[in-house]
Length: 263
Image 1 (cartoon, rainbow, N blue to C red):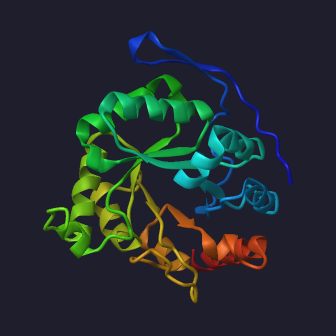
Image 2 (tube, rainbow, N blue to C red):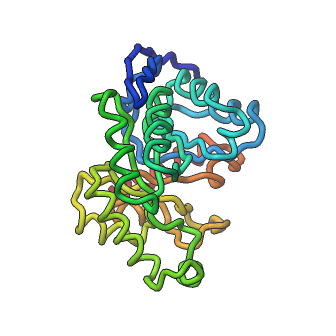
């Protein structure tokens, strides 16, 4: 299935007089699915073969550091051309100006969502948010990473942080909301508390989601899709249980069916 996604130009003015012209597609979502499939491939053809076997109405796609480093912005363009919403998961974390320019460049590509590290602080996150203003309604969702789902209390202690992962995540999520971002990446265990604390409009994106019977992999704080839905997760990132399934499209449909039943 190959869908054509129309694009339009949007002028974007950055600092130092630089003007970028976006040839990206509108960030209006093409699906209401909460599932974001993590594309963790080291082979471009394999990735595109997988993508061509699923329906853009059933999920969104996440492109992370490995694939973006290997295949560059053209991969993102190829996915958008096929009709998919793309979450560019590069976790920008730098000085405010550099981060702002990187976020604007991601918006120029036409991605649906982009993220930064909340640990970069308020000035960095505010600069990133302001960089998206010229894109108006076509701006991607901007979210922040709080505490990586692979981290446990002892990992934080090694960084001199005495808070629990849940406490540190809430602290950073509050800062993220104060800076005007759209939401955070958090573990599913934090979702109920975060929805109560930050409101329905503050989006929660959760990795570490595994259907019942799946291996935990390198994630430590995990939930099933149905549990995540009940907890208030807006977008659940699922990788290997779908991409490594014998029939990925069926695995995706099974997950969506379980969510409909629970919903």
